[in-house]
Image (tube, rainbow, N blue to C red; front, side):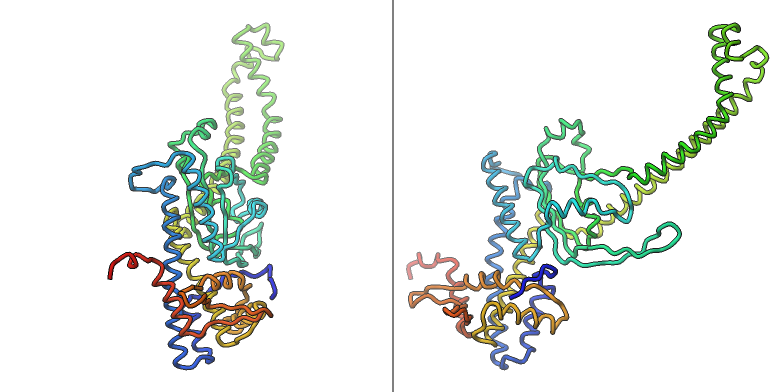
Length: 440
């Protein structure tokens, strides 16, 4: 069983398609194919109910800190209970993400992504001090490489970059006093202090991860500062040299009117030079206008670049946003349910058609089969699939039965289709036992 650091465990095919491909594989008889479809149907129903419970837990624990809530809270939890609810929320959310085969982006990788230059080169800064400790959760799925053409000087060049097919972000902002201490007007913020936000995005370049944070700030980068400052200084020097005599004369005119002709004479200003006041002022104002106009042009270049960046942010948040807050839970729980049942179905199918394989052999066989059928390489999560298969066991009084059995030599075996269906049906029937309390 090989582990591939450059592959993902995510199976990028629909559950219904995998079931169909298994049946079309030709290793099941016509009757077994029909029974296999029924097995998949009841397996899906059973896991759907299990994940529905997890969804309800997520919604209940999120309710007190939901920024989009439109219902009244009848019994607000005290701080201790709310902290416990948040901890359960985060743990359950991470468990759902991992069930859906999302991967965590480390703090180091996130900071590295922030340092990578975007297609619109500007400085961006995200103040992580605005978030509660341990309440910045960043997961992704579907890593791929893309190429884009950009203008550089006078030629078009291709730039390659990493992108994520799916990105999930959960953050919780600190309470209002934190932002009051920073002298920020909380009414003007794009978020509510003390609340938690959950986002789900699609097709996000790695260098654009920073724009997903609501408190991102934009400023000039060092290239813009050089473009703005150096030419301005360069333009100022000849203008200053040219206008320096006039500036000295202007200073003398000021002295003439404030301290008298005698003092002004030391500056080289006489009553005769006073007659040339208007041309002097015109020359000085013209030089100032030239310098100011150039500075304004450089500043507008920066402003235009900033507007392009903000448009990119708007487009990302509008066109690439799949869901937010409580809606994310619904989508991710559905994805987690799909991924786990797909893994169980594949392991069960291959043990049904290749009895007595080891766990390592099953893992390799599924990865090879996926590559042959779909031309896609993945790192199948056989451990997760085995863990879920072991949950499918019951003791109905006649002994303990399990769909999966591993012998002492590591060989794996599964129940036949009819027995497997019956076992899951038994588990399904005994999720609730209220009818046992009724007199027949």
